[in-house]
Structures are given as C-alpha cells and as structure tokens.
Amino acid sequence: MKLLAIVGTNADFSYNRFLDQFMAKRYKDQAEIEVYEIADLPRFKKEAQPDSKVEEFKNKIREADGVIFATPEYDHGIPSALKSAMEWTGSHAQGNADVMKMKPAMVLGTSYGIQGASRAQEEMREILLSPDQSANVLPGNEVLIGHAADKFDKNTGDLLDQETIHAIDLAFNNFVKFVEQAQK
Image 1 (cartoon, rainbow, N blue to C red):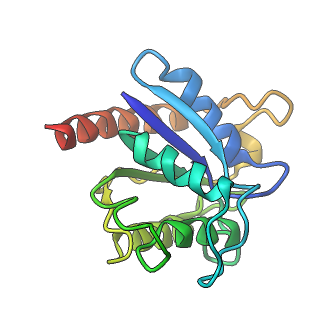
Image 2: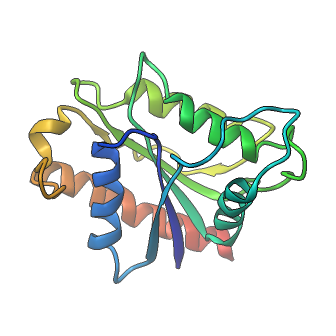
C-alpha cells in the first residue's frame, strides 16, 4: 500500500512534520508512506498555470492509494499554505478533475494548545468533502493531539506520549482497512 503523508504547513519547524515522519517510520511494515512537503508549492491563483511543483504534487496524490493530512491549526483553521495546495487539486483549477475524487483520506493534527488542531481538522474534512475535491474521508477516528511540545522530543522529533501513540495506532489501522476496502 502506498500512502502520501502531507505536511500541512510551510513552516520550517512543525510538530505535524514530526507526526508524519513518526507515522512513516512506525508503519513502514504496513505501508510505504512518503512524507510530502508543500512548502515549495506556489500560492494558488485561478488564472495561473500549474508549474512543475504543482504537477508533481498532483501526480503524487494520483499515484497514492491514500492520503494522510497532518495539519496544524492557525487562528481556528488550516494554514494558508495547505488551503492553497488543496486549491491546486480542486476541479475549479485547470486540469485537476478527479485528483482527490474518491481518494481515501485521513486527517489528523497536532497543535500547541489543548484542542489538538480540532478546528483545523474539521475545516480540512469539509474541504476534502467539497464538490471540488470529493475525497473519501475516513469517518470518525479523530486524532486530536494537543500540547505538542509536551508530546514530541523537539530535537529528535520522536513522539513520546504512549496514549497518543495508541490513538494513532488505532486510527491508522482503521485507515489501512478503509483504503483496502476502497481498492475492492
């Protein structure tokens, strides 16, 4: 199984990058997980033609059996870089029809605060379910990782909190089954 884990920010330092890297390492025997950075994608502009970075991004999604979105929360929403990246995959942009259509997607995230990027995750799910995306979003299985600085080692990126690891294990195993079901 081939999965694409999108780092939902263009920040130089991100606990969500650590989260994607953790998943790629922990579940390497269950799936090939490629961690993908959106930092180099240009800002979406409807009139603009997609450049090679945008085409690469769309192709990575097309080639993946499923997509994992790890998003931080900025001002009760997803970062503008992630919103822009998703606009490049929407059907309203040229040549993007069906990039995310029925693609299995999992949303999770971590934040510095107590709510664990809950509002950003909800916004991301809404975007993925929009008519321009029409993704097949894993229902339930919310993984809200609050107080990221207390749960990850800032130097190594290791996830240290066993309760959080258990929650991710459950959600990831459900996502694997979800992707397998979608492939039938």
